[in-house]
Length: 293
Image 1 (tube, rainbow, N blue to C red):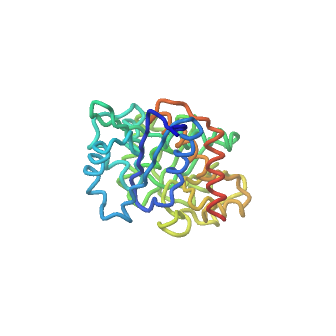
Image 2: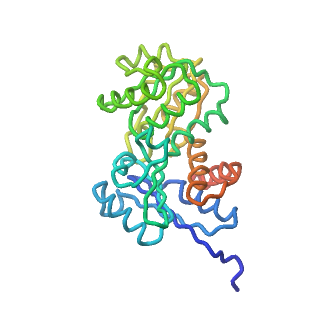
Image 3: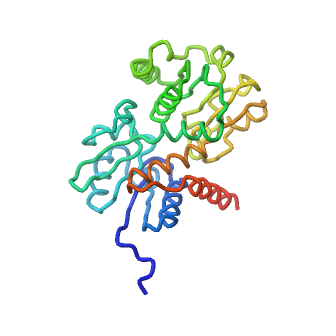
């Protein structure tokens, strides 16, 4: 009668706005079952519950009290969570953005970032021939910081960054310039001019995401067939930007690969066990098909 019961149960959470439809909880639970582990994952949607970013300290405290192994953190909390943590991984420290928090047995909270490798590993796997000479990045928040870091870490020669908040652009340019060289990073001033010379464009804003801003961060008339175009959004998978890029003849990178690669890395960080990446990609595809149905 006790067949299938495991001695160790991991409980994870996801904190953010408009995340009730996220694939992360079922992907992690499916991966746990495939690995022979008991995994429970709960969304903590700030838009649904009577809480907000101001309650983040309480959410973390209750997560620890209730025995959570850790929590994934998404918009708008990736940078707000940092003062509430005891330690950051080297990558999270460099990025100044956290999307994975592990609760240690001694009570310490350790912040990690899997956004950067989620994007970088997805690009390497799904668009291996992408031209990394000059990329225009839309968004300088937590996701934008991770994408910039990942691209520069892969050897990108030049990145131009745009955001509606110029102070965030300036801060990200300064941080990436310090890490990778000031000649490789610049703030954007003229989107049309920058895209005209770019080999690639990446959207790291919430434009096109279900429950967020409609439309695309990049006007479709600026896209050229010789460019590659990536999006961090995966709900929907075919965002307006991805649709416009395909229509323009561009190679495209949807946010699905980033979601799967992040899940792989987060599972490893939470449990100490390396999951099967092929299974995680397959789980994402199955979840996508079920949503269509």
